[in-house]
Length: 204
Image (cartoon, rainbow, N blue to C red; front, top):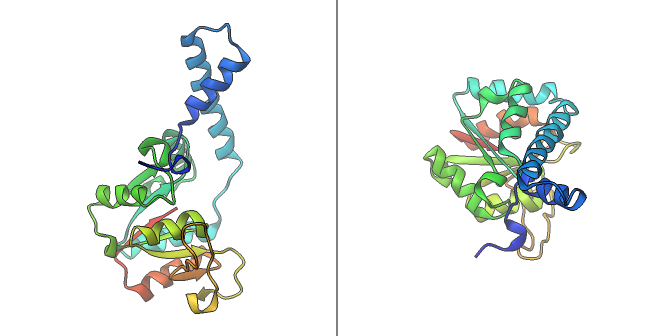
């Protein structure tokens, strides 16, 4: 059985509950319609408020030119909106697989969501590396799934670090978890891949 914090609830269900509380006299059909429209508007506004950096675009182009396959594993409450967001950023074509926690019913750091991605890519855990910006959700989850982890710690003083330079993080269930690599700039990711000799990459 999955822990409650590891399970995910779709945005549309949350919005339907909220609308039901605000407008209790609406029919079930009207509540569902408003919940769907609210979800679409919310993620459309969210997408417009974000702009990927040039370094992210550089890293994606470089990785693809290296012949690598890429995927997304995200604690995202709306898979449809996540894909539309990636397309609006001009990044959708880079990712062969996109996993949203809302669609698979489990969230990072539960290793199950990482294994789902491996299954869809038809790859073994020793064939990928996972890149994320959270020690708790990304590094702990990837390590639990047996996957090499790279932590994106924006503003890190060095372009590329190894765990020997860091103390790691202590969590309730995983004391002293340390990523395999730490980068301060996603533009450094191709270099990490070259160092590891990896053939596949997944990203948060």
